[in-house]
Length: 302
Ligand SMILES: NC(=O)c1ccc[n+]([C@@H]2O[C@H](COP(=O)([O-])OP(=O)(O)OC[C@H]3O[C@@H](n4cnc5c(N)ncnc54)[C@H](O)[C@@H]3O)[C@@H](O)[C@H]2O)c1
Image 1 (cartoon, helix red, strand yellow):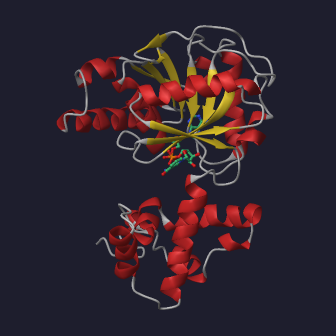
Image 2 (cartoon, protein in one colour):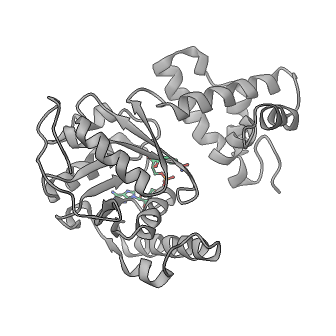
């Protein structure tokens, strides 16, 4: 049920068509790493999922990633039902305008560019019924600024999933000033029905996760620069001393040093110089040491 708008703009009163506590029809725009993980998570819970990818090759690659992810989940005993049945609910479409008008939720996961996100979100909004909820999986852009481009900003928010999506337990629900409180509650219910935990965060640079995670990573890099300890020791201090599952340098390697650098630059510009990237981070990115994906970052993966 998408309920009252709490004075935050117009929301159409409607009962979302649900299966197992999630919308029966879900759209995911962008079938890359995050989009296919999001699609897999909804498929596993019983929804029909349409993934938007432009071009046959990209669409086939996206289908392959979802299929591999479901196979992996089945092997680990994490999939209720069989892979074929889940895959039979997946469709690939060419553009957001092709989404089923009865879609209850669309999550966009196209690359981190505001112009691209605005283009796909406005196209999806025009194609869908008035009750549909639109969400962005952005990790750093302003949800408020994206909302400004939409006709129904009350039904728009951030759903910040984490990588890898099927295994991750967290979704940050990012609330812009115009997001209707009723929509926030509906989306929190959907996150919980996916078997994940929601944290509700006011739209602000870095939300909660990136702001804290990046700051810890940057301080660890500064400690490395100053020769306080080596990378193994700094990570062990947080893993064993504070029970972090992964130390801040290992975590930076997983996310990608280039990705972290871009977020740090953005946060330095919005939140202040405490986020200024250390020279060592810039040097490693320039040298192509981007973390796990290149085999070397602060640790060696070769
Ligand atoms: N990778 C992460 O760890 C992570 C974590 C949280 C959030 N995010 C965010 O999720 C979003 C996607 O990241 P990703 O890592 O999956 O990127 P990705 O590059 O793996 O995937 C993006 C996909 O979007 C597709 N695409 C591009 N333009 C499109 C269009 N007009 N219509 C449909 N599809 C289009 C591309 O073909 C590609 O498959 C970004 O906003 C990113 O900041 C990423």
